[in-house]
Amino acid sequence: MVLVLIQARLGSSRLPGKSALPLPLSATAPERTILGHVVSRARRAACVSKVIVATTNQPLDEPLVALAAQLSVGVFRGDEQDVLGRFAGALAQAEGVDTVVRLTADNPAIDPAFIDAAVAHHRATSADYTYTSGLPLGTNIEVINAAALLRAHREATQPDEREHVTPYLRRHPALFRLETLALAVPPAVAGLRLTVDYPSDYALLSLLFSYLGPGFSLTDPAGLPALLAQHPWLAAINAANAQVRA
Image (cartoon, rainbow, N blue to C red; front, side, top):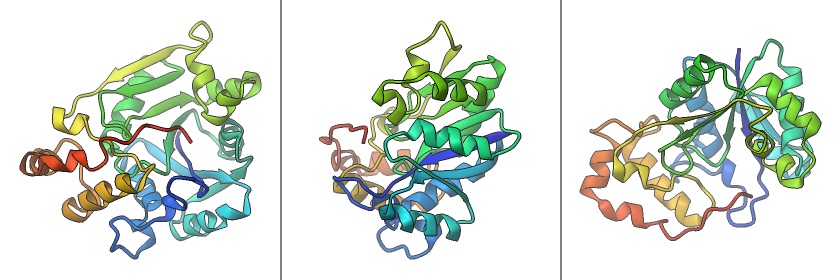
């Protein structure tokens, strides 16, 4: 069984409450929040059996728990800094899981077709950890064997290994079979920044979701590639933003 775990919290210093923001800005339904899009896109992947939001036990994240309930998705709460521990706790409560897909609640443009492709490659190669490359920032996929994730939880000790979930796996290729799956999208799409860390990131994604609709793909030639060809300035809206990990 494939379990999607969505890492989420509301305590961002650059864009507070970002996971619960409407997307686009005019939206009102829970399904049209940033988290709502991540959940709905994960559910559209054919391989996915279950979705859980892994958030913190801080009072600040109570609204995320309420939003998850509106989205009819499970929640696991744990230590704010120990995200790996949160993932292990959520996995322990989900029976029959052999594969975990890690997503984050600030990446609303993930493509369900690429989730399916990543999981298929992961299983075909008997990998412990698979990471996709070649996609826009904020849309690559991580797939982890359940047993490998639990081993990382038992053995990882460095703060960044606890906070960012997968560094322990990547740092120990002698212990885990690591795979990279190269995926292709049109060059103009590949260069986009489709994560939400700053207000300008949110502005770009609000425009894209407003114009293209909630289910747009990264590869449909009549959708995002055509829009970028017509309005290449869109890519400049957030191009100067530096990638951050918190």
